[in-house]
Image (cartoon, helix red, strand yellow):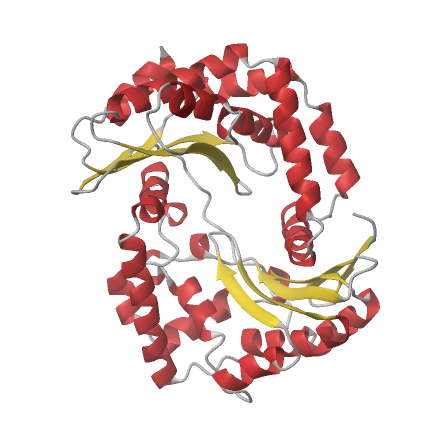
Amino acid sequence: MSGRVQISTLPNGLRVVTHAMPGLHSASIGVWVNAGGRDERIEQNGIAHFLEHMAFKGTATRSPLQIAEAIEDVGGYINAYTSRDVTAYYARVLAGDTGLALDVISDIVLNPAFDASEIEVERGVILQEIGQALDTPDDIIFDWLQEAAYPGQPMGRTILGPAERVRAFSRGDLAGFVAEHYGPGEMIVAAAGAVDHDRIARQAEAAFGHLPARPVAPREPARWTGAEQRREKRLEQVHFALALEGPGYLSPDYFAAQIWTSALGGGMSSRLFQKIREERGLCYSIFAQSGFHEDTGMVTIYAGTSAADIGDLSRLTIDEIRRSADDLTEAEIARAKAQLRASMLMGLESPSAQAERIARSLAIWGRVPDATEVAERIAAVTADEVRDHARRLIGAARPALALYGPVGRAPSRDELAERLAA
């Protein structure tokens, strides 16, 4: 994607990053706060997500309706999300409205009212969200897999939090999390599309420049353990999710890991899809994906199958993982590299995706590699490097396993670990 990435740092440590994308009439702009689920103490579990909800429930000068109307009156869109690493507040607007969008976003981030009645309303909304997740097997199973991989630590807890915690959060709890984690050194203002960097930087300084500099709160390192979560329930299918610890963002294996995961289960031509769905008919859908954090990563494989077929599906999955370390072909690896490169380049045609990328890149690496550099690094990965990565990952594997449904015939995590190591 053509255009120029520019970065500025305010005296208090807040960073501003923009990517001007010629030919566009709109822009995506937001604030990425490097505080998410993994930054919560156990008694705070779920509060980062609760805080994200409360940002839209009024400020000192805007009601909830006025927040929505300010953006929608100019045809824009505003939203937010919480992950384990970050909470993001962002808007998509036309070029001339980026100043308005940043004014609204900075207001909801810095000046949430935390009105008592609105807290109760949103508490009910989040409890409904938790209930919906529990009723969605192919959603909740990933929370259980995360807990099995990282038990007893922030990385393993759910982003929504348990219902009993959500019921107990107070205004003071919300304000306390902001005080702990919403410092200028933990914030990045990012914008992409029809943007002018100098103007955005000035607006960011006007909105955030008064915040005092302070040390960034330390994070508890993730510790992969690998365990099993098995939940019996009368469902049509057994939901199967298996994970291996992968590399983090900073690992030299970062690109090899993505290529291997794609070849293993990233599309209809992948090993798992062809062997387990197309040849054996053991499931409707099966896939593998990579997730990355600064200090750890996860390769996740998911499928749903019948109670009668869960044994065959899980054992065949392990066998294909093992075989992939030895006999992935040059053609399979070339296809996976092409998919990874194309996915990156297609995503960068969206200003929203571009704003996300530059914010996360700056947070992780302290710089924003351009698309050409990333494409060259993908192309430079050799087939031997991909297979060597797979061997190292499998050799050190302590799988995590989550099962949900009629799981009686499903092999245990220990049995699958032994099969993987054989």
